Image (cartoon, rainbow, N blue to C red; front, side, top):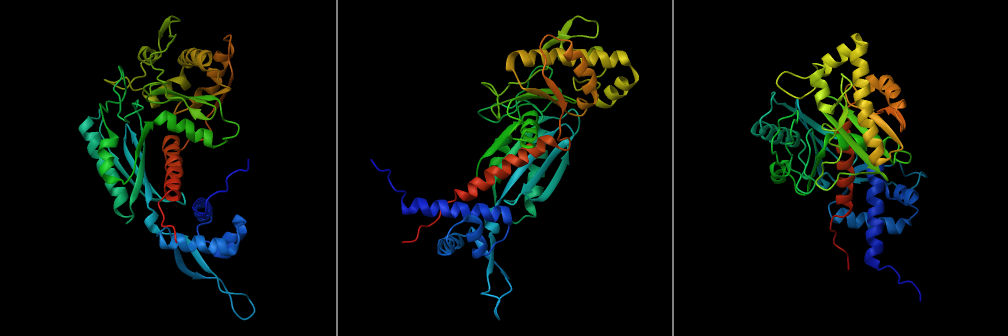
Amino acid sequence: MTAAKPSLELLRSLTDEHVLRELMQARRLTRADLATRSGLSKPTVGESVRRLTEAGLVVDTGERTPGGRGRGRVGSYYALADTVGTALVIGIAPDGVVAECVDAYGDTLTRAHHEISRPARPEQVTAALRTAATQAQRSTGRATRLAVVSAADPVQRTTGRLIRLPDAPFLLGELDPVDVLAPQVQGPVVVDNDVNWAAQAERDTDPRSLTDFAYLFLGEGLGCAVVSDGQVRRGHAGLAGEIAHLVTVGPDGRATRFIEVFGDLGLRRPGSTAIDVDRLRELADASSATREALGAAVSGVLAAIVALTDPQLVVLGGPWGPALLDTVTAAFGRLPRHVELRAARLTREPSLTGARNDALARLRSAIVAAPRRTPA
């Protein structure tokens, strides 16, 4: 049997996708440029550009190539239309809400920040979320096709709601970012916790090699993301990697919950289970006993992670994790099973970067999948 030939409609769709993705990468191209880059014929590219222009996805920029007087025909530059829209990227953290609008080229068009007080109340975070999103969207003049949210709290996998767990350091409550943002975007609202996004951003620094690793986030809060076969594993409800209640070794050498170690060492913020990062760094530098206690506690958590998930390596991230790399490595190396440890490569806004990368990929896919009229 011979394979069925692809339909004309499918071929046109594939050509249009190719043209759109080339424009996303190069920003502006002539039809001749598109033909050269894609390997498609000039007539095929020309028809695709015409279809995409009629659909409102591509525009003639008004710019022309030098031409005439023996220099060849003048070429018109084409680019994505503003009407293809933007993606909204949100970061919800203890110090406030950050909102960005990014376009299909990966440029951040706007950025807004709205502070929240401590301890944060759910209604306050909801208001900050709505305000920051509105401020970021206001000056773009473009439709928002989708939103991607990073939250410093556990996230229910199927609904995107934030979950309140015992001893959670950030009192965000039962916040529902999907419900808050849905009226402000045309398409889906995707929510995940900040450690998962940070792990994805780390993976994206070397996606070919970083396919199986654990990302341990050590900051005001404690978290872990497990990446297996290149994908973050979230668990049944989305709570995989919640390590605060893992049993490890305490400062007195006895078994204790990981989160209690910081209370025993006097490293919590007043009235909260959140870790006082500045004080931790200060004491870890000044006291070898404190540093060794932290190294032992973290290595005990790593032993459980390695035993259960079998990663190729473990990445230490967060505000104070990399600073203790040597101490943790030494303590971990004395345990029966250990793997390579290294500090996170991406240190500036890793969670927001991961969310932004995902938003860009989703926005581009949405543009490519946009319905187009097929000419007769």
